[in-house]
Length: 328
Image 1 (tube, helix red, strand yellow):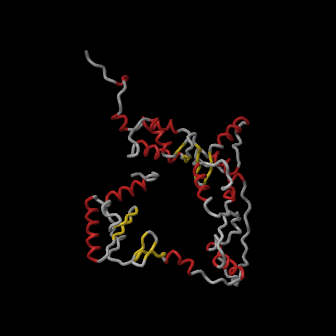
Image 2: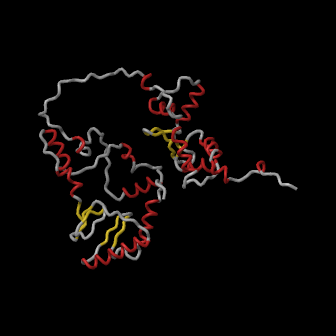
Image 3: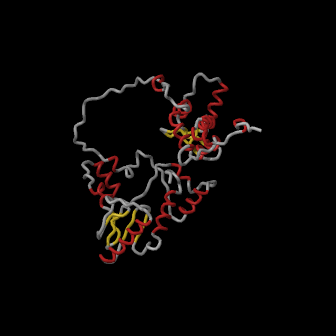
């Protein structure tokens, strides 16, 4: 099964459940590739384990010996400690909180009390959430969230990231104020001219001008006034999320822009490999778009790639122009 398919986890889970359908909830629990076999006694557990291993052998399932644990009374399953006493939290997950150093300053004490000693109120640093419950025209996904949140007595407050010390307590631990500050000051080098920051190399991708405009507002200097207006209009279809550039498609699908050095690999995957099938140039290009990739010369490059494919030329259909004449 190829990576990246949205329904791959559900398909794999259904496959595992169908294999162990007669054993589920009796003496085995399956979550993806994690199996838990249990029993009331040692002999009962041994019989159950034998049945599970036989089923794995019959269905050609391969188990990892290093990741398997047998004959245990308690163990870690999906991040929780499971035993005959119930489900407990894994101590390794709260080890960082348990080993917090004691505060050594007034600021550190206030930060700790605000983190653990008072009533917990969740503040968000995303100001747009304030208008979530009052939004009139929203998509179906947001409407489902709004209907769910209306069941709770909820108040959303916006707090700047620099002021939200509770959420970032672990990453903003107060350093010991008794440590002497270093007297060596490193001068700041402000000599970074635009020519150096915006230097164009020979390996820049085809969308370098678009990225420069979206990131810094720089328009190519060699464009006319009409070309500049057209260039700005085109850039509205893109957005920059470092280190990738994405394009809004007319079919409401966001696709990643592919640089030149990766285009042949994408075409090979969508045409030659198991995901392809040696289809025509148009179908290959559509397969690339369906996979979430885009570049401006996609259809032209797909045609060039298909006519140079050795297997397509050997086993493809023969046109009337290339047919051998029949002898009368």
